Length: 56
Image 1 (cartoon, rainbow, N blue to C red):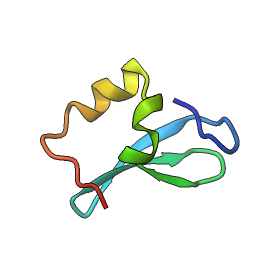
Image 2: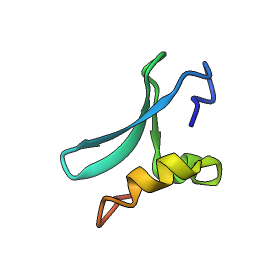
Image 3: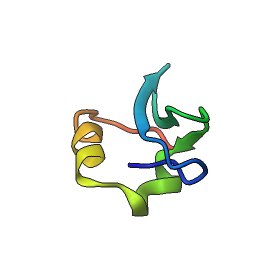
């Protein structure tokens, strides 16, 4: 998955009970619900490892 701003890869990040995506380039953070329509198979597979995703 790529950042909407700079097209660098997004990383799945878990912190303090929440899961979000963070750009490896510009460091912008995305909530899962912001990019849910754009999720690719690899990112969905990573997110499936978490039993609960908190929407802020």
